[in-house]
Length: 105
Image (cartoon, rainbow, N blue to C red; front, side, top):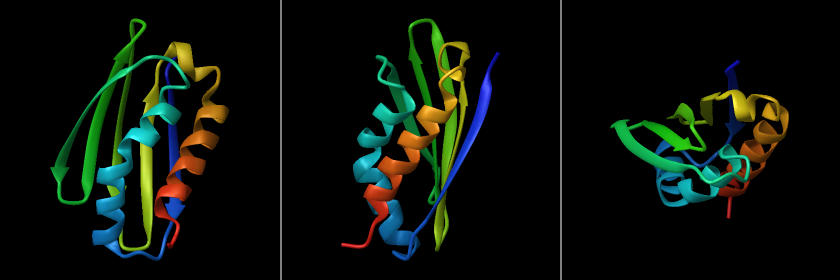
């Protein structure tokens, strides 16, 4: 059974700075989304403000998107069977890593 998850993270960086940080820090979010398992990620900017990604590993596939808005970022991912059982933990990790990326410095 697959499990869709959504994380919304508020920020006050503006759209351009949020996009820059997501582009540079996507690696940190990968680990959170993979639940500590080895997944190979492929990502592509499909629009200026949307990063689409697919991750494959252990016979499982994660599909998702990151939408960047002026005051928040929304991460949507569909977790495969293997990770659906720990969706709350993964969601918490994505939120934590996302907040670290987007906190004002």
